[in-house]
Length: 64
Image (tube, helix red, strand yellow):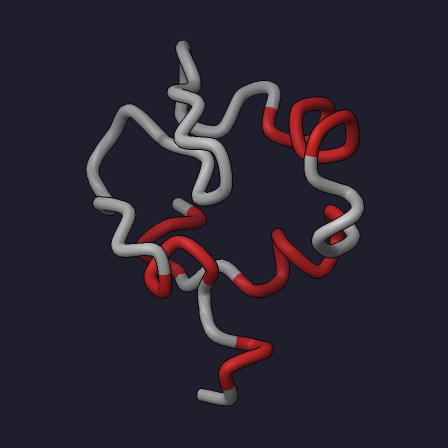
């Protein structure tokens, strides 16, 4: 996988088990997996990459 398209969570060595963790600021998401990631990413990390690109970059192990 190309560096730009590699799962950001894998690249940052974020575990695949829950709770989910932001690969940029290490925020821990409460609730059911990635609940709130869209608002969190758009508010804090949109300058790194658009939310849609971040979500598309996640591998199946981190997305599900």
